[in-house]
Image: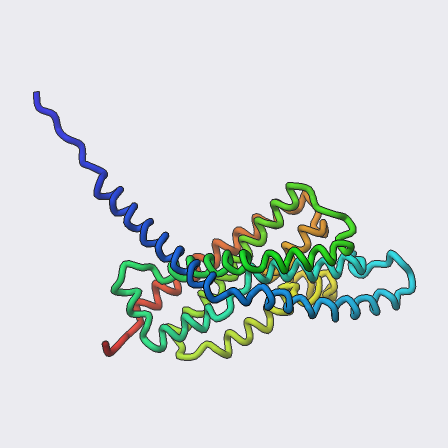
Length: 289
């Protein structure tokens, strides 16, 4: 009685191991490069917190004009405002993607994009791994300055540490904010397949992002006529939402819904980025060696 041998899965498994090995090598190389040249980041990160001193003086004067301790502005006490600025610096450190969109557009314009078409490396995956390595290297070096500043400003966190569930939601929001920031800016960079220059579009995006993400002030300070519109935009997940979750400005029962909406925006920008890249490659024309 003869038996039929089942097809071996070894080639598939070997290909998977090879691909995972390639991605690990890319990530490890990116990490090593960044840790080498970011030794000066500790001092640089500490200097980035200096503007918070100006904000403390500014909001101290604003709340002092209320002439009554305990008065709030849009649900924020003076201490909450200072804590909010510190937390948005953490959130923006996750979600900011300096040079990503312009770098993609430049590679398209200069023809460097061709190497991703002839080599077995996905452009978006390659850039994402590089950004993950960048953020890990940044926080590895910057953890001490961050800890020092938060220790010196500990009295502004009058309600202390949040519960485990709230802190986990804060971390989840920061991680999704990082991914939204990446895929949003990568999608802007893909416009380079259709236009030679995206600098103006990127400037407009950065301008709106700086104000409408909540980096400048809590979005609850906006006039009632435009606050609902701004809250509908995905930009608030780049800074405002993580800080508001941490400070308890979003009710615990509303946090799952807020995180679900943030996740939906993340999926949306992943799809937009992938579709833009696929269609852009179809119309791309490159000449020369």
